[in-house]
Length: 147
Length: 147
Length: 147
Length: 147
Image 1 (tube, rainbow over the protein chains, first blue to last red):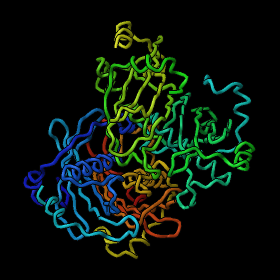
Image 2: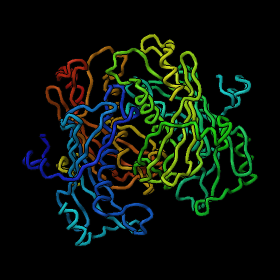
Image 3: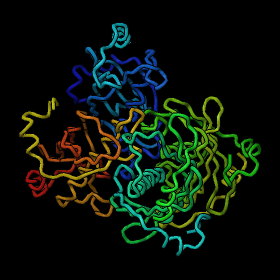
């Protein structure tokens, strides 16, 4: 775990509590025989939305709110290859939170417990119509940092 | 070309005039070493939109119209394997047109001229808000059948 | 359920026993706000592999066998729109089986029980090295038709 | 261009010479109406392979060599939204090169010349069978750094 966003590896790993799983589909492999590197970001997107749902956030179109969370940047480190039909456990946590942005960290393990990917990325809350940043509510910040 | 939607193969092939190309991406292969069967439909979607653009139809969000063309059904026959980095030529034609639906046919060749895929599918024109069918204009029908 | 591969709708629906589920990912939607039509085929591929696994077939790379099941043709009918975060139940059955090919049928329902997609497709068993058809074993045929 | 991997923005931009283009497909948008963030990595993969091909490297399966270039890490910064049907120009350069790894940088512009994405990532050359790192040849290093 060489990534610059990980200071104390043990502490960093211990800081995750939420997790969800994905099973690797055949269509997500490539001709090298493993999961194609570009597919990982769909797993991370899926996991962070599950994370937000677990916290009570609603990002569906039906929510009536005008806000959307968009990716400002994202990065992933590939530590172990992942193969067809493996079940991955994806851990998500909020590493820090600003006015209208947050930094999420990710840890992805296979069934043997090997760390396959670590990742991080910044999300920004925008108003769908105006494109302007929308501050998080205090209760949202508490939820994100307390979990 | 065994597919039931092809009556006279030579005539069927000769009936295409529009074509566009796609180059197969590495991320579209799978662990069998060829293009994953599920990726073909993104090529077909790309090609039919290019076809409509060539005919002067506009389906972008900026068009201000309330209509969308949705897929009612689609089918593809896989005749020859396709591999990474090949350039495919995708031919598209309107096989028939109804009140608010049309039947498109597709022919996909590799650089050697081998037929790799044949396909067909029905599109329906719907109003985005109501979900009801929207009849094509007479001039649109002429465009689609004349090309 | 207008598709030509469905003779008696009630009987056809009643003929399924295996099913598995997928949850629709955000990255599988498109700018029309629903699941993009091209993504469905990855769901079907996932479901048929789960179906084969449930029957005791092994298609992983680790199996040491030289056979692969490739898609000869596939078709899908879109009956109801599917949206982000819905959980789909995908039913799979073997409709018929030949020497080295089989015809699978698919039925996809949302959580309300609405039929969203019906589909069918032919798979062919090939030898990976020679590309020739490989007959199914009698016990495999029994498994496929008995389930 | 806030990313830490960009020291002098003007100099950084001026350092690119290779570029290729991709046209955004409908199936790459999401329900927010823009290109889904996870799709960008397929564009970057496509562009870096075109870059290697332009330099005379061969990564096809037909090459007979036992080496593969795998992604060790990758990161992307999203500066401007990208929409359906836009043509993106993707610039690629080798920022640095080690014994068996290299650091590639990417710059992605839309047709108006706006910078939409900046990105970087490390690739490692591995032997397909052993999984061990394979040093680049001196002539390869020269090619990569000279371009």
